[in-house]
Length: 577
Image 1: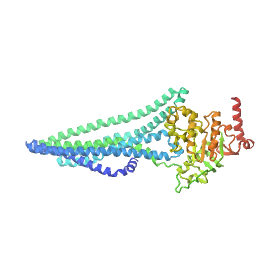
Image 2: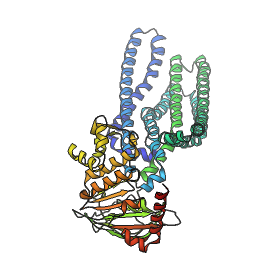
Image 3: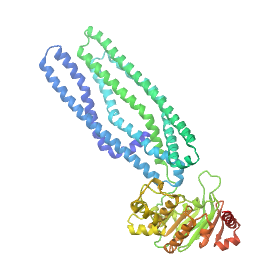
Image 4: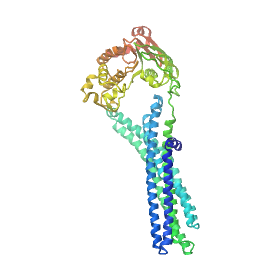
């Protein structure tokens, strides 16, 4: 999975990678040439007292060293830039794919794990790519070249290479194989910590209101301890690898000196050749050590790459049409024809055979008990979900056949839980229309009954809004969301219980101000208070996902028992109040 992800996203950087390979080759060959020069200086210069040869060979060594430094620095810089570019591209790909998800895919993954996959997991892959480009490219060249150069110096000691290299690789490989399950558990633990921390920060008011600080602290502590325990287990294994490497490393050096001294004593080898051979053995072991330590990072990066690839391989259940059909300009109506929707694997559909038509210039209210499918119904129009049966039409065009941008350009949605982005009042309102003037923003605020409190805020339109709109009340947040939809001036307004946080007087004023603005538009309102939709042109009553009544308020009072039950329950509550 790691190779697949990296290969896909490194393809645009094939030119820099080829240049990096050339630089690594030059730098490694220069590094391999230096011990040989050093051995010749000892044997032919120092041993014979040839100062001229020492100076000449020394100048060569300086030149080769300078070439090695330049090549290594340049290769490292290219590796860093390429790895950073890959991280940027992978994050952008994950962001784009998540942006194409329907509500179904977002719910399946969950926000915490999507955040972890686009940050922590991408960082793991980026780090391993950098290490691979900076070290692993040169490691095999160093290993093969070191073996060849060591054999050139003395074949009699080559058995030490045959023993030391496999022993080092096998020892560290055994440690690494034990790390893989821990790395997989570590990434899951990161998800859990992120999820709990995000819940506690978002729901801090609820936690404090119910005095659950100790419980939440214990809950977070448990998740944190799980992550810490996994990280400690990985750290212990990594700590075990270093002593193993150093023991093999030092034992090999001692063996070279021991057996090399015997060969020098017998006249089969010179001191310079022994020095060069020992340097090459060190270079070979260093390359093996780099490769094995690099391999410690690979398992975690492989797990991270699999999690990233899972997101990239997930296709949205809302598919774009191959041949989009344009939605007619001007006022358009909404029609549901036998619309049925069921979540994958669900025993029962959320909506069953829902059919009704909302025409321009009218208001259609959708009412029903909790869980009747009202929000899901509204979500079918902008394709937050796709119907699993029947069809949803906008202006006579099946929404599945329309281009997403064209579809959304005709719709102004105010969701059940309105969300405001960090920024200012103006930046949030201009999500509806990026080119809207300040006068248009104030007009939308006036209609949404939000002008007074926005003018009272420091900065007015430039007043800061916190992430999620947490620095304004629920009613203010709803009114700003309504104003954002009004700025767009769409052909279809979808209000999903968008007035629930408003008091009765504000609700009445807002609805009165909306009527002249939406007189030519199609308005679909999900409502809880029957009193607020009493004058709707038609009311659609849902029960258990099915339509049990359609008509005006007065018609339903005489023909729909479910609607009568809803009305009577609300009247009883008002009387008690």
